[in-house]
Amino acid sequence: MLQALVSSACRLLNHLSRTLTGERLPPPELLASPAPKTYRRLARVRVTDQVCRTMFEEFGAHRRSERGDEEIGWVLLGVREESDALVLATLPAGANRSAGVAHVRFNSNGQALGSRIVRQWDRRLTLVGVVHTHPGSLRHPSEGDYQGDSLWVGQLRGGDGIFGIGTADAKGLNGTLVAHQSEQHRQTLGELNFSWYALAHGDKRYRKLPLEVTLGPDLAKPLHPVWDVVETHAEALDCLCRQQAGMSFDIVAGVEGPALAAQMPLADKGSFLRIVLERDEVRYFVQQEGLLSAVDPDADTVNRGVYLILAELANLKNNALAAP
Amino acid sequence: MDFRPLNDTERRNLISALRGNADNNRAILMDQRDTTFAGTSEEVTDDEVISAIKSVPCHYGSL
Image (cartoon, rainbow over all chains, first blue to last red; front, side):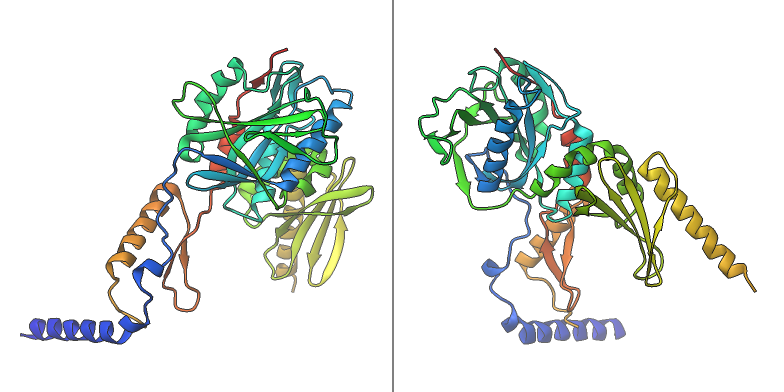
């Protein structure tokens, strides 16, 4: 009988609750749907103007450099929507790439750390594609490209990837100030072209991908001036990111230009360890009890330096606790 | 506290979010005022991105 009474009371409360709160709820169609996206084949790629500028500028600068006859490229990070993708960041191939006149393999260690840094600002960013250049006038991915890409695209969101090909074979009739789109999937500035394609898992061939340029940033652009530092310390910093929670990165003014700064919270509120990395120097700073101190752990790698400092800080704390 | 049962749409969304969390490690968002379910985010994990970066194949050109 008690059970029946409780059950009736619950039903009554339930009904009352629905009556009282039902009016406050928006209709179901107005609730944002949290359902996972249903990815379809990419119908277009949207690229921000700053990403376009990055690629044209760096391709041009690369061609004028000592290694200008090699292939070059970028990994593209962006947001994958159901039937298109928005490209928001370029991660360079890096000086430690393996490249020649007919191939390029990116330095993935640098790009992996770069992705961690860029994605601290937007966790929706994912790998949406790859751009690389060809030395001649082949404005289409090669047969060799297909061998690797066709096996790789399956792991991307929607099983579909974006592939850009850069060439320097345009007539340059339009000058170098304003780019133009000679075809839906191609953008040209001066003698430089970028042609865009997509390849889905299981496809026998690439398909032309219409390009749309929109106003927006290259979120990785601030990292490009310190990319040599990123590459040099990539493995050590990546190791720290995996082992220590709360690592964050920033670009700061260094002694000789921009520097990469990494920061790690310490146990006490408001205290942290800060590492400033430049081409030839790594400096360590500890902020504790409102005091900022420079520390020299005399370490050959960043992660070793960090752990030596953490060990020393733990030792100091233990000694302070043991003191009468 | 609101102990109102979920309506069909809310229930479907919550189940979908729980499945996304379990299968793909997607975050479940919570309303900071009353801790109710506020949807899912489109966050992508570091492992997913870095795994794709580390396996980018070599690309070849043709003279």
